[in-house]
Length: 117
Image 1 (cartoon, rainbow, N blue to C red):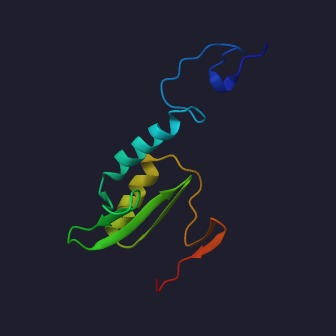
Image 2: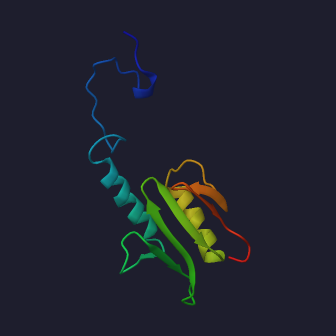
Image 3: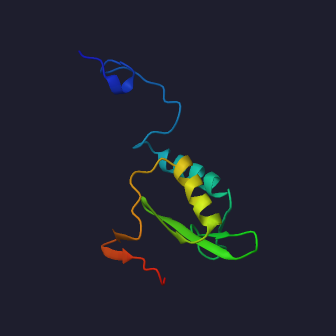
């Protein structure tokens, strides 16, 4: 039997000890959500009315960003230096695939952002 390079050379049928959550395991979504919330604590505040809707405020108390996860997507919008820095922090600490900006499909709908919005 050939060793699997993706599992450090383990042979098929080997018993492996996972040191962190893995996709497909029962605890993986909860582990991801815990990490996600910990990363968002760096400036984002969860809505008191709508769970998983987050607001970002600048130092003057102005709203500069709104975001929220939906299934396996993350939607966010905002403007300004505080928002851009926060977005860079999210990208750095959460391993997501491609980021679609200003125009994309979500839940079967075309979403577009214009300069006036």
